[in-house]
Length: 202
Length: 202
Image (tube, rainbow over all chains, first blue to last red; front, side, top):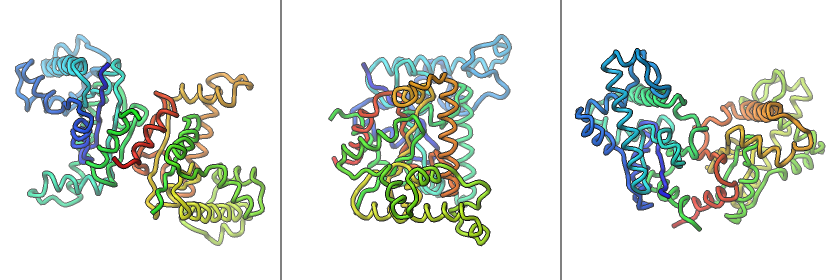
């Protein structure tokens, strides 16, 4: 049976890099942006639009995890959000069936629950999230630490919202994960190499 | 430098067994009840009394982590609680200085923070905590699942209270741990063996 590892992660925690390195260490397939690309292809929507829908909970909608309602069908935006979610489910299941893999985000821990995935949540303290964001993206924007913290919190709130909309579960609540990893200490490279050893037989 | 691993754990999660097995896998010293025994010896109080004090936050007390106050000195129970905490700190520091070790509970993650311990929190879902408690202790008492759940929650609330009293931090808040491990799936033996591999160099 394929081994499926899902990574949920706080923005700025290095969770994406962790997932990629973990997949390299284990020789597993790695899926992240590929999921958005594939949804865009199948729905004939732009990648940017798909990304945007997946990053936001539709306003005043009935939670997707409870199912469709006639009321939702009357709203084309909500219907599109449902279509994207349906494709997301199909694609994740196809990926999981193909080979052992590491999947970052996209509610894969919930959608693939019948495949018994190993569910990891990656987090860090705020100063290290700020430092990581500065190293990666925001240095040109000259944001203050306070502004950057607000942006980080806003992204994480949207992730939490979208996750709850899709799953009915609280994002980051430890009970929904097998392992929660703090990347504040050490390097993501080192942590990924160590965690890969969890999956090796002695 | 000695490697210090601290284990905080939900009652019923198998955290104590996990700590013991982890120490065996790594060839580290293991401290748990030994800490209570040593405090009892040094303070000339009974082990049972020490255990009781360490398991309960004193009523309407000034948090211990903020320090002594003259008001506290007037209350012999609080003063004894302070004495026990002081011995707890001394003993933990002596243990950490002696050799690499695994320490279960006793706010060791906080007290030994200057030794840069690797801080693990062990948890599980309620049904598996109930099952584990039945297997270990409570089968003769014929408690219903609901009663057993209430007992488990009560012990965990006391642990949270005592931890907060000593440290000013929220017990179980992931940010205070390097790794949070869910023992709901798999065996504690298997999980401990896997986690031990985290500490081996490749």
